[in-house]
Image (cartoon, rainbow, N blue to C red; front, top):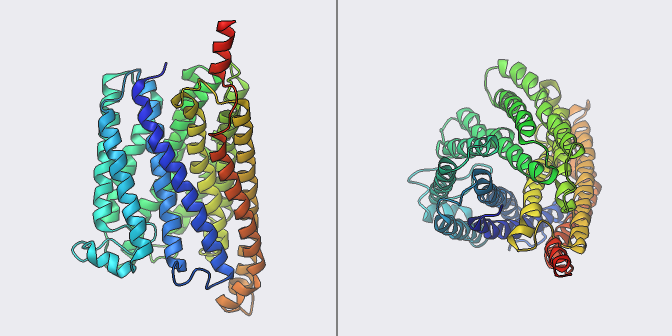
Length: 466
């Protein structure tokens, strides 16, 4: 059953896709600046391109999570959204804040932006991923709280399910942990210690709960498997995720001046972090194999299975590759870290948002359960173009990282950083070409929304008329 208030998810999804394209574009600019240092200088220097690239990633995923939540919570709760007007108001406020921030990054010196936004009154700017002006951070807190209030009131007046409960726990955790963005100790060790409480516990903690709940919702819809079976899997996955993710934060404490026992705690529990991702792979394929119906949206099924596999490879395999302290001693901060970050974010969060958009958009656009066959074929091409190109990006970065470790850190005669960068430039060129293919896949994804053809709803109407 569809609910009218689910339509508020549509602008969130459109904004997410738009910012996704912005993120890719600035990633390509950065990639080219690795090998052509003065590309677009001084209009868009590397530090500004990086600011936009990383901040666009965080923001578009938040738009995607919010759209997914506004779509699934009314359906899970079997009632209309508490306040569609509040949801739309928060959308325009959030989008306006994002656009102003990006314009600030592009048009002003960062120091000037900090000065005119009152950072001296409450200093929070200048830290990686948390570069947003303090006033924007405060606005984001208000937006997230209003968003959670809207969802919580919807759940309270309707049916309570495990999927919506896990989603709310993840979202509350997201909001609560973000408050550490306002805590900026003068001591650098303390700063980094608590900074990871935002960054790590978001992406390797509460975001995984959001991901698991969205994936569970889609699998329930496309497979027809009993909700009780999927919910039991969900309980186990989130329990293992929280245990390994929270204590596994210690792998970020290896070299920042924290007590040395974190090398043991961080190594052991972060080595266990691939387990919940492997469980998601088994979970997703098991549910699809046990499906009681052949859902017409085959593209959404592909995105869902791809999410589980790529998340396991990126967050699990590539994370484990350099998470043990004796290995991380040589690899931290190298291109191996970049390889892990790219594949983990793509597999776990980019793909799950695209999965939800693929499932929900046909309903939101009045097409029925699925878009036309032509649109789905384009979506599948998009999936493979982005997934395969991302695999090559990660392989090129991994090769660059291994060579970097050998030449710069491990050999008996370590070479200077910039000399090593020149020697691994070939991998950066290859990564840039793979990035162009990735952008092509994203464009094909957008193109799929404009593809013509008979939808499931059109076919049903024709059969009824006949």
